[in-house]
Image (tube, rainbow, N blue to C red; front, side, top):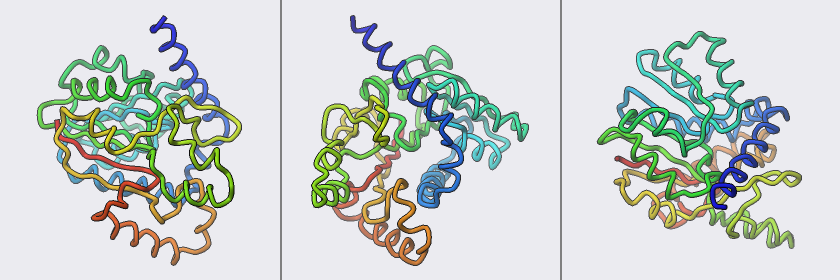
Length: 269
């Protein structure tokens, strides 16, 4: 019964992202300034650490594996995604620019050790909450640990359970379902018309799952700076966006770092 439930869960996740790939996901992401700013910050943090072989989990249409492979032609990159449609987009992006140091494979986190072997990578990165869609965060963290070389780096990001701004704003608007949606055991994702089986995690829950790693740094995003899905609110006001971004940076040394829309953690194996 458990195996059947697991299979059904991952089939539903894949179906969601297969459909997403046909709904203009690439163009929406490409024109989103807030998303791009957060993505670039993820990348800047990641490249502070030395690595030669990297694995991306949840690559989507391949924005990041393409960027990394182009920037570091002497290093090797592997990307995986559960969605056949997303991996097709990522492969096309890699092949278009003839990036021979990158490859894309359709898989989920349960089969990565089987595919690549233990100790295969000195960097594993997961951007924009792909680990929110795994069935068990504890299992996923253990699999990532097996994949990594001793001393390797994992950069993992999550949709945050305790997004204070959304909770307060939506409560004030009497949108109670939206305000408290992240606090439930299952979170339905961002779409109001489609359900994505997923989970939001607090920093404490993430720390527990990654207790076999050493935490090197952590950061919160969109505390006051608008989340990517509210990019329209600052698109024509770059000065306001800059002010809010700087406020978020100053809050990293306070407890408010953990109240943004996304959290990022850098771990050493």
